[in-house]
Image 1: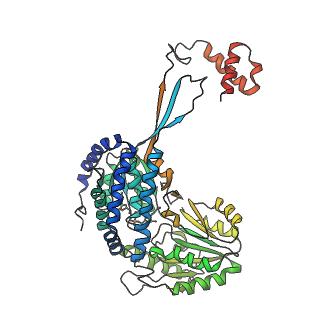
Image 2: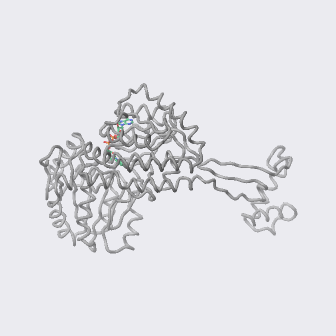
Length: 492
Ligand code: NAD
């Protein structure tokens, strides 16, 4: 077990944050290219630790090793590469044009500077990928990170943190504070400059309240209730295995897992029969792993029982599997709309399928959820899908695929409503981990600017002249003022 997997007390958090701030001062002053050089070393150490990280991930979460490779290791090789290239580019100062009539001999630049100490709190379902998608860009931007990993996967967290040390990251820049919710709460309340939280909606509410007391900005990536919409013209040979994967990968413990399917009537029988038959072929242990926690196992059982109580039919699965915390992949039909499987996040291998009359009805039903992370449309009509994608209330829409873009570092991953408003991946995530700093250099050398004291009557006359020129053209304002206002308008 890694030496970093040591629980810490709440009272130790403030000191760790102070150490992180100390380390951050020197790190932020380094050139972005130098920080990228250090991250290349970390990437090499991460590759060296591949087997150990995959083993620990499969052991601590109960997911099949193939899923640990596909979901937790391989995408991060790309992630390091993307950010090592992109971060220095995004941090190049950007020159901004200023109107030379209004602002003569002035030079303005914007630079993305680090926020300082970023607090990161993460869940257990993808215990490598979720932390890295913030740690890597945050460090490259010049921040320090104080990371509270999930208490459910502590060994994985230790191994991930070790790769940063082995790769040559200076001490104090990535601090792992291991513990439960009270330690997470202490991190949010400490002297941090930004909080990135990924986890459940209820915890997210606590985090945002605690952060508000210190006016700390907060980026929240919360749960989901993703819908898949299968239309009459869908290619069922693809839609059936695609929807099954979207619903059952990671045993459904995926923020973007398909938790609701809406299928149009004409194709519904064929689709449902196909999905049921395909689901029956999935192998427990190698295709669909165990649920990670007892709590999750209880929620899944309760959601299925609630659906059945409200008239739902179990078409396949519906009961615990043979292994510990295993639940058979389950397809339900005829479920009441107010059943928990339609309203609450299940986070398990259970999917209700509802038959709808039209594509518009499917979109309406999809938008009824209190979450809005991702959605998918399965159809041969690409133009129609693009139109429907615009009205789906969520952060990511996939057509004839589902949610794999979470593993693509150049595409933003984000949600609406109960799924939170945080952004990971892409330049938009980088904008959350930095702040724009404006630099203005004035080389005018004149004794004073027209807007300095004393104001006199000229300021008012100039204001009026400018409005006249904007509204009616230059001919309406004679004299010097008109000439000035016209030149100002020309250079807009
Ligand atoms: P959780 O909310 O129970 O815990 C998340 C983290 O918060 C853990 O590290 C936990 O110790 C910590 N925590 C608990 N109480 C806290 C408090 N008061 N203050 C600060 N931190 C606290 O979530 P979980 O069960 O670990 O993960 C599952 C949830 O995560 C699901 O809802 C899932 O949808 C969501 N999730 C979202 C995304 C996304 O990108 N939107 C990705 C993965 C998981």
